[in-house]
Image (cartoon, rainbow, N blue to C red; front, side):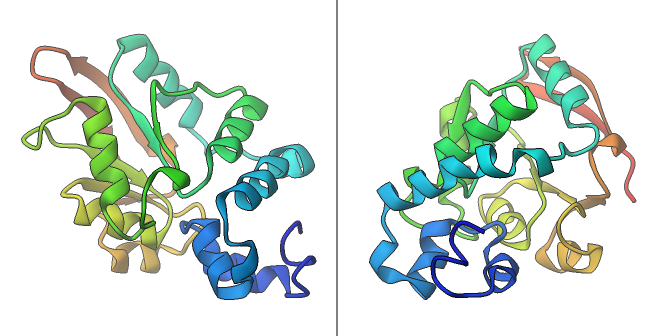
Length: 198
């Protein structure tokens, strides 16, 4: 583990408190001296290269991303990771890069604060009356999406269904194999999806 060993802290302790949160916010708790963007971006940028062999894409994600791109439907990644981390994983897994991305270093406060999803809406050029579907796998992210006024599809890829439900997800699925992209209407700026809940 890049950070746990360096801080002489069990990496599992960090993992149980960090998923869905910005590393800089977690570091403020364990190592305030290194809680800066240069350090975080450098460490996170190494993760895909060092641990890429362990990477597994969420089942169904490649199909959904391909359908979105083919339809030219607007979508974004809104993440608690830094740009080097996200770009590294997308490149490694050969997944589509979005036209818009909101990363950890671009917001003052991380999830569960809604600022990141509000910024994502703005970057996509979507007005407040256009419904947005957030796909999230962490309680902090689910709370963030709900606080930003979005509908949230919760995945149970990293947390138990109970945690996803308690965080406020509108629908819960195991992974993206339960989601089918049915179309995009550029006139109304609405997307049609079929969700088969778990």
